[in-house]
Length: 236
Image (cartoon, rainbow, N blue to C red):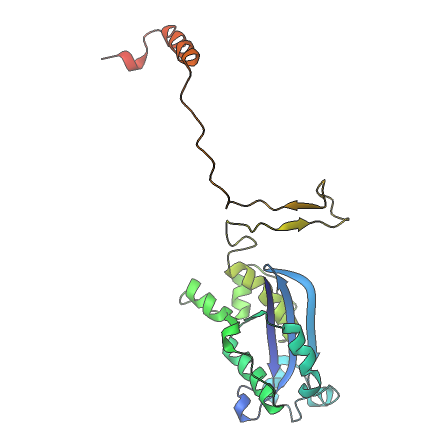
């Protein structure tokens, strides 16, 4: 199951008001675990950088002016996310900006149905509690000490850990799929075989095992009971 944890940084809050994406960060998950594959790109927004946005992410107009345009990186970005489910903190915001950028270059929108919003997940699980990324990192004891400014890649890395906690940890369900588990040569706990089926709780029903005692067992039990003096179960 391939998922992409995604975050963007922008020049402001409204993609329909002329604000643009300036950074995209993505982390690939396979069965809820990070694979090490990532996508990270700064983007030239072709406009100035408002002070309010600069104070959030620290990306200046001068620095971004040397970065590629969204039109130049769109193919690589879309190829990386593929058809995967997108894990986004406040999905409406990031998806709005991504689809606004795609619309500017005549590309199809990414369907909102592909996104899982971790803000909504957190509010459902912890009603009334803060649902921002810093608050969730504190709740789950995830180290975010390096987050002095917002950054799309760093925030995606933190969100991947938060998402894992929100779905219940590394084993969100009890039923494991019947798949081949392959271990690496450097694994100290390497299995005797390179390939073996994973355990599963779903399988063919087994016939019940007989548990009634045999005649010999009943006789042995009666002999043992006869040697007990004044058993409590025989008292009136």
